Length: 108
Image (cartoon, rainbow, N blue to C red):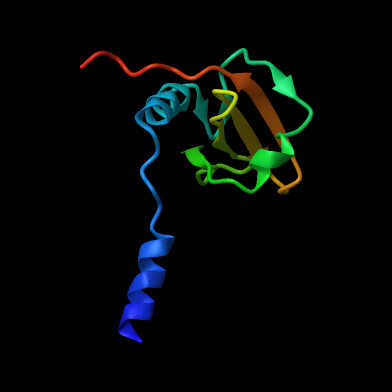
């Protein structure tokens, strides 16, 4: 029983994203806040379906401000692009920014 619980817990542990995507998230995180996105980014009508149920990286949360916006970054590793989904108010109110390029990590 204990080994079953341990296996379930280990399987549910989030994996560490590729460093490229960590650096990309850190970069784009600087352009989003509960008040919205400050980037002049392209938008698409909706997030590509193959990304809808994948893991995402949270860039910002709505905070305590009424009407605050949350931002999640979805990675399309095959196409080497990201999409940032901005939601506010009802869950069906969203803006999808992208496709956006990855941002290389600075040299060590």
